[in-house]
Figure 1 (cartoon, rainbow, N blue to C red):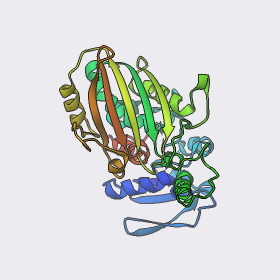
Figure 2: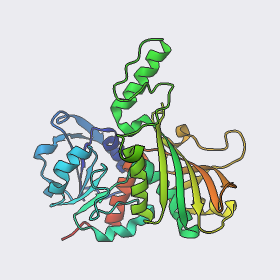
Figure 3: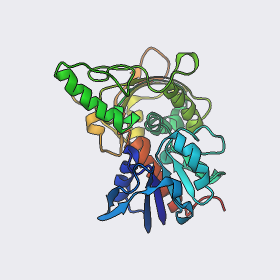
Figure 4: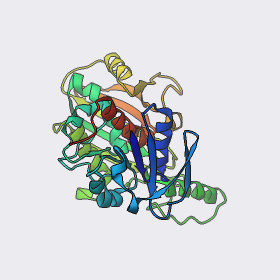
Length: 336
């Protein structure tokens, strides 16, 4: 099995390498690719040093699977070219809503991998990925009508530069020095910004619309979802406050059991000080953690949850590698 990582020097590309290091995928040859600016850099993997190649000249016929983690513009330019020779797992938003491209979270809708028309598989938005892995077992049992979510997202969702800026702004703030934001619309240090991605229709941001549209594509078109997405001064892990309205009645203990038994989920829900998960505990972990599980008494069949997950893992690198694992397990490497 020959594999290439496009965007190998970025946040998600490096995280994919970390995940592959721990997994037992049958990798024969690994290729690391990035822009000409990063070509020539050296990265270690399983004790061996690899040199980063220039994307513009890479021959995709040498690999079976290509991970793309270099942003939408790069995906737009290179993914379909690569897909003529191999299966592409794309982490950008570019192909997510393309009707001919499956949008996959393996624990939720791996059956959609049987219908790959373009040799391209899309990875969902990080905030969607951790949400649907929790919604799936509940939807199967009680049928979800509506979801209202507010997200509390870490700066790593925007890449390495925002992470560096948060650290720098924090130092400037504590030294009582002037802060000029570069990667944020307002100061991020010791603040909360209710604005992720560009504004789109009717006052919603693209991030909020992604959550609604992607959840429908992955779980089903009848689920209504509305979101408010907020950036917080946190380096890693996204949190979500989730309100769910079901068609069928439920009890909280059954909810807890369904979630604890679900692949990729872990319930931490003690009704005492500290009996819940926070971004710090979730960082570096594969699971999506669910806490503060309680009935919403204001609506019929209503439930409240708190969800926390490492966005670089669950929402990007881990999900991408699990898609590859599913392909390999089923001996499926794309269309003939």
